[in-house]
Image (tube, rainbow, N blue to C red; front, side):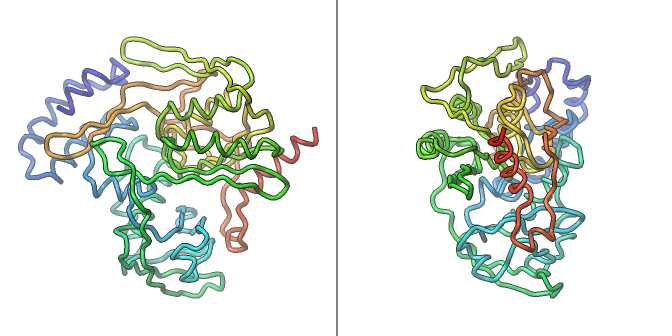
Length: 390
């Protein structure tokens, strides 16, 4: 079923030069003789990964929760991390979260999780396409979060190095994220989060973890009370993607005229897409924050706004994980994601495998994080302030 679905619906009939029929001949005997779910999962993914593209994956529920924790983890300690300079560093702590109550701060380096060295955990993280350093860094960052998060009301032990280079330990009770949203019967419930606030200097700030309903509605409502701001920042760090329709709805609030935006490349045709502005579009400067964990629809959103000159992109180059996909529940219960279209922004740049190069490229800095500073966000704020002086 997996091979057949890709063979019939993959957007590229040449399969990138890969002999897809030969892949069936090579892997089918192994799949038929697989010894169980885990073995089937591994062999099938080996076949899919021959295409070296994103959005081709067979996964168990456990795998989804571990590799995509921002969407599927049911319990959280309330932090975000990045793998930087071969260290796992806390980059964000949600106010009032269990980790903050336990004394953890941004910039702290995590050394062990439940008695396991983080380097040991990193070693078992499966490398997923597209194969580049950015996707590897983002994948490891998510994989670590997948081990920090877990079932609600369970303890996780964390050993970490603080600002004084002292090794400390904390036992943290994971907090429930509430009730997830059923998007598809082919995947676990998704936990959708949205934040809108006004920063100092009258700058609007929007963060959400997934392009899905009701984020589009939440954004439209938030925009109504932020129309007097001098600029808007979309923080898409740790946003793995979502629904292209939600992308369209948000962009319609940011353009002032009908705008050719992108095209979708399907197997048999290419469809061009233009968007019409909303009745009262936002016209002030816009910045999109991205990094190695900004994937799929996040990259589509950033690439489209960059292509039409509507937003400045700030942060780190994204992984290039951008194809359109569908999820299917396999007869054995596994979730199967397969790509059936390729989004291409108005300027013709291919994002898949390449990522989006920011207009202002800046990485997070552990020393700044230890001081409570987010230098990527600070750069976004500075850009908007400078734009208002012109």
